[in-house]
Length: 240
Image (cartoon, rainbow, N blue to C red; front, top):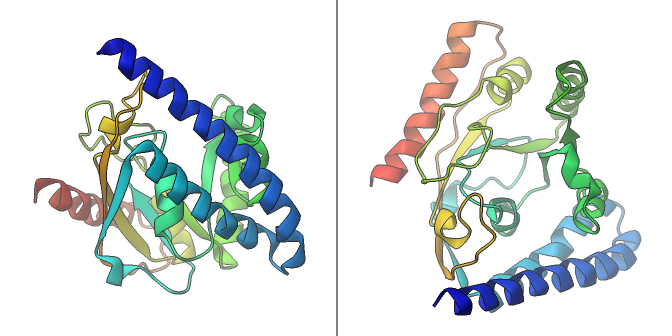
């Protein structure tokens, strides 16, 4: 059984590598003809991700689709279970957005290039001063209309439980007055468990929460209120 899972997982990652290569090649060529190259590059990636998921036996089911916005800016706050979370949400969120990746991911061929070409952000977690400057840059982009996808837990949850939230994304929301939409991903932790590259086919459910309006404020108690509202929606999805 373990040998079969190992062979299956190796084939899955081989498919992932090929998909990234061909997507990068095709998107790199055709995105040039669009006025917004970053958005075009992202949208061209969606069919590749969907076909890849189908080949890997990963089924994506969306609940609360009516809550998805047609315009931004929005800050999407999602729990984090798997390496596939961002790929899954790229197929779900219909508007242009950016996510924040670890700086080390930029060194991975094709993946790092995709992150740059699609206009996502990287952050050096080992250098707090540089990270703080980058957050100011991100805040400026959001205030000018850029939507964000953030994982407020800060890291993947090994057992699927909702970890404590970090304040950074909520500070960006309240300092720019950008509304929040909570998202709960269920089942992705079983596809690729933390600290392993083994792949298991299955269904991933994506629950889209209702919009949380945000006022411009520097009040720390308001930050906690936003965190509680967002976390409560995500936990309600988990419990139901």
